[in-house]
Length: 110
Image (tube, rainbow, N blue to C red; front, side):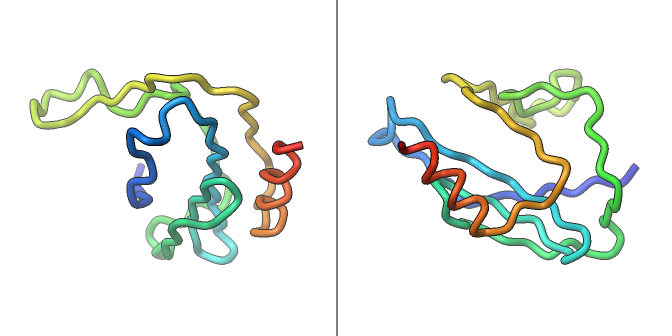
């Protein structure tokens, strides 16, 4: 029951309001890396430490577009809800390469 968060730097500001973004997160246990992409380009990459490697990733109960634990008793813990829309959500059962992610983004522009 170990968990680890891999954060990206902030990517959104008010000037981007009303624009669609292509967001991708990759968890690659074989290369020991977690990475985040925006509009086909990698914005952060993190090493997965041995204690946190999960070779068979399983998504249990989840809420798409919601980040936080509403049952947590810590008053300083933020609950962040998505204020926008999600379209064409996809979860893959294989690690996508940088070029595959870039191609997915480019194909969505057509």
